[in-house]
Length: 277
Ligand code: C2E
Ligand code: MG
Ligand code: MG
Ligand code: MG
Image (cartoon, rainbow, N blue to C red; front, side, top):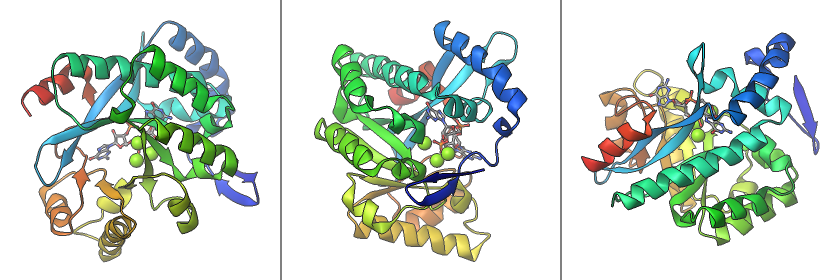
């Protein structure tokens, strides 16, 4: 199903199982309950700086500790949360939780760059987004310079002035923004210049094709060059093997994230990694 906004049509819901209305109906009250009972957890996937070979931060990724089903992956509930609007309170919870975890990292004396939290396009429909994030930051004494938000290109299709003012307000606090899954959406170069986005994250579908598809290799190289020419950092997602890593080093990608180094892990495991960093 394509959604019509500001004359741009884009498909968001077409692939996932949430297109099955039954899933959506049964899951919504369960998700509310999960939020209330604090069944969501954040896992952390380290990001590695290719210049130093050290962990420079992590992406926070939500999981659902379901009382019967065990650990449920985001693909099974985030699309429903987006569709029902529940992603708004869930997203605020994630920022709050990441802030608590960042405090633990700081108290343990760890040195790290930043923690990335995903923001859904749907959260930009909330007129209080920037104000609420500010409040969460103040109340929890979160260091905004260690916080980074990952947006997908779909977020940029929301009300443009609202997105622009949110990003501006938050970036003035020292928060960085990165563009997630870059290359799979419809971002325009004009928007890339206009918005305070400091990092491009190359989608794992392109990274996965390195060393097997010439086209994917060209795309990865082009995105690295584009990022650097626009004075942005570039991160490759989904690095699974040494050949991909070597390609990325050769083409001067800044950071990598992927199963080759580590899958997303519970916070205690991530802290162990920081300790040995
Ligand atoms: P994403 O933000 O693009 O996150 C990267 C996804 O790639 C994660 O999937 C991660 O586990 C996976 N990944 C990392 N390295 C590799 C690799 O080497 N190979 C492969 N095949 N996959 C790798 P995950 O954790 O299942 O999350 C899926 C998506 O769910 C995320 O994609 C993000 O869009 C969404 N999501 C997760 N947590 C949150 C959240 O707190 N808020 C919002 N709005 N969305 C979230
Ligand atoms: Mg992400
Ligand atoms: Mg991604
Ligand atoms: Mg994604």
